[in-house]
Image (cartoon, rainbow, N blue to C red; front, top):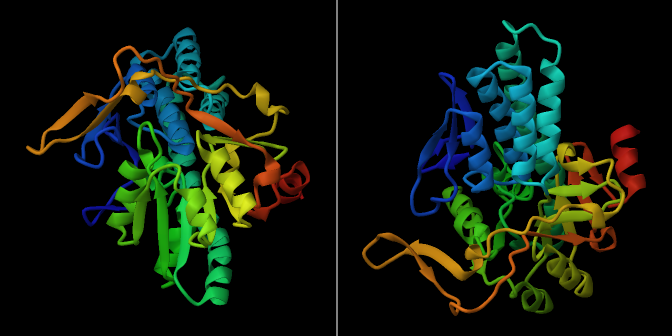
Length: 357
């Protein structure tokens, strides 16, 4: 996808260095950061220089490549894989990617392990591009149906950033929007700012602007009144982990959007690649919910009148705060799951029929 008219991926490997777009600097600065060690990869994930379940997985895969470059030793690789998996516990793609990499290189001769690891990490990225493109083509059908009936601009609400910046290209929730735009269907996106890190305002709006797609940033609690006023035709969000029963774990605030959508008969879709499906965890209460540093709530970063990037305190100094990063949306509030293989009900039967049928 494009930034200032130039095509980019969110991550690429060149000259034994992993290159990423530092998303903590967007939208005010565009910086490409180099990752040279597995520790660099871990920190990039922890500090959210990369974020979004698919991109976290890809970064972890290349983290294994960097670990091999650093020290091609079994015990070091094992410790590196554990540290990568623990860097952010909620997104299932992280463990999925690391497990896949370790399985691929296990038993491989030491003189071949690097090349095989690089090839597998690149394959994970290429697969994600293909998956996200197909998610978009499948989701496009929903937007087309609404437009054919409405004959006007389709208003879509999304939460957080499930755009191409959260994947390798296309995005998950944004992919149907990009495909609709390319097909000439008029779309407008309501972008939740997504406190506390403002991934909607800083990232989703930024990337939609780069593709010339009309969008409006709204405060996180605005979606309900817009639905009541009939100004939302459908919701499409991403997910960091979806259980086989259809329960969805995504950025905190997603659950409240789903409740509002249900109350106002607004379709609520979740877009995801199969790598985000957790086939093993049966109870959503067992999903580890990341509790991040409360400074993300009490401090905010932005550009001042002089054009300098500054961070300021916005809460009373003595106030306590809690910063849970994700919530669970029960399957009963989800209209459907948009995957690379098609659209299905948010249920065990729906997912099994789609992926095992």
